[in-house]
Image 1 (spheres, rainbow, N blue to C red):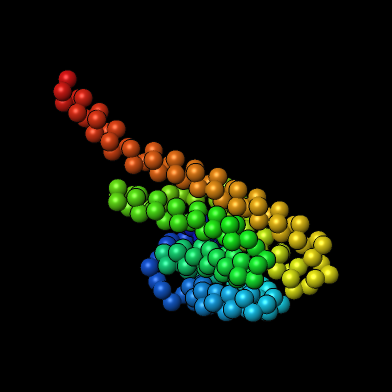
Image 2: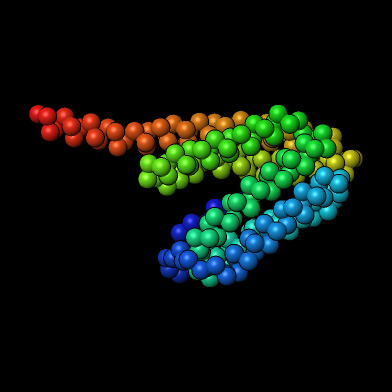
Length: 213
């Protein structure tokens, strides 16, 4: 799990974010996106070993596209969108598939998806005020990491019942903490959005006071 941003490549040469579409990292991201429905179908059908195999392949390609993007200066704007989108969709697919099978309660799935719906609304509000998306908070990264690994760990217990005594407590611990931190980060984003959209009003009020004095 990673977020690609402008950084450095070997030799301390600064990477540039390009508008290219057909790069190796982007192709890997497209493949990951195409595997999301396959992953979901395997979970719903109870083919947990195959679902885990798809997830392992996705994780490896996720790591590789980041390495290739940085090392060969192939960081793109599209890649910056596709990479986290694929991660989120895999999480949603796992949540929905495991909830359909009754392994996860629907309230937990609703709590996690509801937070992302809130962020979508905040993004629309920010755009209406002329702002881009807020920078990712470290709590959001930790929460996503916890959820990204909680669900596969729970799936391991389904695929290999003999390991369930160990994987279930660990998976549930990651899931509960991930959901808690997910919303904690969400409230931070909510507060930041409220602060940012008030800035023009504050500046406008100060300008009015200056003109009136």
